[in-house]
Image 1 (tube, helix red, strand yellow):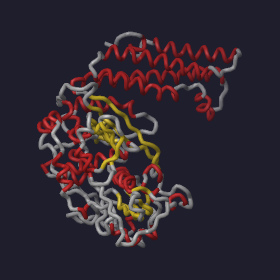
Image 2 (tube, one colour):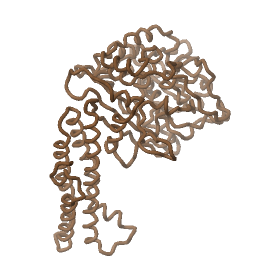
Image 3 (cartoon, helix red, strand yellow):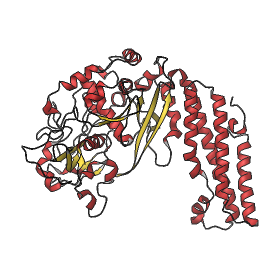
Image 4 (cartoon, rainbow, N blue to C red):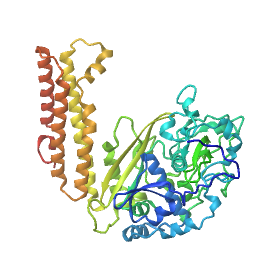
Amino acid sequence: MSVARPSVERRPVWDPRHQPCAPAITDEGEAVELSLLEVFCRAEQLSALSCATPGEGVALVEYLLAICFAAEAFPSSAAEWCTWVGEGRGLDGVAEWLAGEPDDGWNLFDLDRPLGQNSDLAPYLDEYGTGPAQLVLERVGDYSQFFDHHHLEHSEPLPAAEAFRALLTQHVYGLSGRARVSGKATLGPSLTNLAAGRLQGRIRVVVQGRTVGDTLRLNLYPPAGGEVGKFNRSWTTADFPRRGFKTKPPGRVTSGPADLHSSLGRSVLLRPVSTAEDEPVMVDRVLIGAGELLSLDPERDLEDAVFAKKLNGHGKPLWPSPTRALWRDAHALYSAAREADKGLFGRLRDLSFPRDGDGPPCTMWAVGLIANKTLAISWTDGYFPYAPSQGEALCEASRRGSDIAEYVARALERSAYAAWKIVYPNPKPADRGAQMARFDARREFWPAAEEPFYQLLDQTARGEPVPLGLLDYAGELRLMAADFLKQRLDPLPQNEKGHRARARAEQRFRWDMADKKAPAELRGEMHT
C-alpha cells in the first residue's frame, strides 16, 4: 500500500469514541471491534474484551475505568458499590458524557492536543522519530533491537486502532531505560530518562464479571475524599503544570482515580499518513520520550495490589516472576480476598451475587509483565475463579494445591539426583547442573500441573468439597509426575548402570510419595 505524508489541511481525524478500537466478544461468542461509545452502550451484551495481549487488555480496562470516573459514574461508598454490582447499575450515563465531550479533545491526530500524546514533540518527530514498531511494547524489546536500529526504522504503517491500544499499553507498562531521542537537542536532557510504567513490576488484578458492564462495576471504587481528579486527554490540556525535561522532577501526586487511570506514563507523538477514504488511518512514525512521574499512595492508588511479602518492613505488592508461574501464588490472592478489610479485596469478601447463571460469579484476572531491565520478556497472567460464599474453601484449596505441587516437584528433583549419582559417579562440579537436567522432569511437570490446579479451583468455587477435590488433584499430579519421570529415564542405556539408575530414581519417587512428611492426599488419605 502506498502512503503519503499528509498536509496540515488533509490531516486525518481519528476519534476512538466513534472509531472501532476495542476488540470484544459478544454474549453470542462473536468477535467484534467497537468504538468506546459502543462499548459502554453494549456493555451488558458483551461477555469480555479480547485484546491481543494481557497487558493491552489491562490498559484498555484502565482507560475505560478512567472514563467512568471522569463521567462521575462510580459508587460513593463500599455499601453503594455492593448495590451497584448486585443490581447491575447501568452505564448509560457514561456513554452520554462521552458523546457530549468536545470533538477536538478526542482526536488522536490533533495538531495541538493529540489524544494521549505530547504535541511539544512535534518539531522533532521527523528527525528523531522511528517506525511505528517502537510503539508496540512486545515488539520493541529494549528500544534498540539491532545495533543499527534497522527494524525500528522500518516504516510499515500501523493502523490507528492498533496504535491507540499500543499507546495505552505504553502509558501503563512502559519499561525503564533510555529513549532514542537527543534530549539536549530537543526538550531537555531528562526527556531520555524513561521511567517504569505505573503497573510495571507488580501484578495487576482485574475482577472480571460475566459481562463487560459487570467487570467495570466490579473494578470501580469510592474515590478517597470523593475527588475523581482530571482525565488526561493530552499533555497540553491539563489544569496543572506538567513536568519539564530540563531536570528530573519529584513524582506528582494524582488528583484522583480519573487522573490515575489515564496518566500519561510516556511522552509520545504519532504521525499519521493519508490513505484512500475507504482505507483505515495509519501511523508511520513515532517519537517516544519520558512521561509523567507519579508518586503513588499505597492506601489510595493501589486498590487491587496483593501485598504478599514484606520488604524492609513495608508491604511489597505481588510481582511477576520469570521462574515461578503465577498460579503457584494463587493462595496470595485468595488470602487477600479472605483477610483484607479495605480496597478491592475487602469489598469482594462481603459481596452477594444474584444466584443466576452457571459457574463462579466472577474471576480474578491477574496480569504482570516479566522484563529483564529494559527488555520485555513475556506476559504472565492467570484466571482465578471467585465466589464470596466459597472464600474460605478457595483459600484452603489454593494453599493445599500449591503445597502438593511443590512437594511433587521436589520429589522429582530428588529422583533426578538419585539417577545422576549412579550415572555420573565422578562428575566435575561445573557439569552437575547440565547432567542432572537430563533426569529432572520438573520442566514438564510444572506446565502440566497448571490445568489440574485450575480445575480444582473451579470445582471449589462451584461448591464441591475441598477434601475430595484435593484427593483427585493429588492423584492426578502423582500419576503425571511418575510418567514424566519414566520418560526422562527411558533413554538410559540397557546395561547394569542404566537399570540401577532407573530403579533407584523410581524407588526414590515412590518413597517420597509414601513418606509420612508427604501431603496426606499424595498418600491417598484425606487431609485433616
